[in-house]
Length: 236
Ligand code: F6R
Image (tube, rainbow, N blue to C red):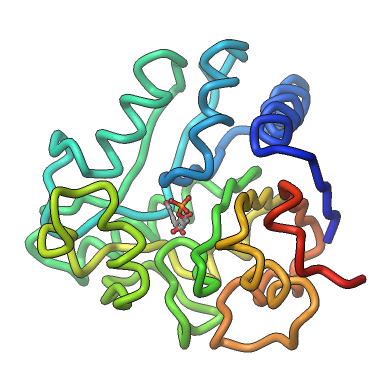
């Protein structure tokens, strides 16, 4: 893993936007995997400002809440539209459908999307419990798209976006760890001391399903962008 530590989240996000622009400039990247949450907000802000040419690029998102329509203001589809897609033009977008009535069919459909659009460049955040996508502790390292139950810790962490914790959807569709590991290149961002323990476990800890992000130790092309707070427990 390449680890890049910046003083602040803003500085790190700017570097990620520069890396993205330089990686896509050769025209080799056809599909990017995208993430939601607080972590990529500044990265998306820098992409909106830089306006890289993404017109030939397809996007595939990691996850979507079960039960939320794409136009619900807390859905990840809405998040992506608001923070990126309405200002930067891409060829095509894919997200799981939170309102799908047949979960197994929806997971199969998304796996098909991933098979047809192999991810060249995958952006990841990380949960305080080490989750990537919504692959919570215990998730299989070779997993495909699944309908998953969110843990209490994740519900509590995500409650900040809702009026109350009761409104946070308890399930999501998530790309599996196996599909994430199929990406050609992975760029993981983590900011703030609340991510420091998960980052230490991901980089220095043993590989274990209990910390899903440790699966990335098996991948040949991972770059991790941290601010000083998220890097504060690293010893090596
Ligand atoms: C988001 C996702 C999650 C988040 C993680 C961190 O699409 O898949 O794994 O990256 O929960 O969330 P934030 O960035 O809000 O701390």
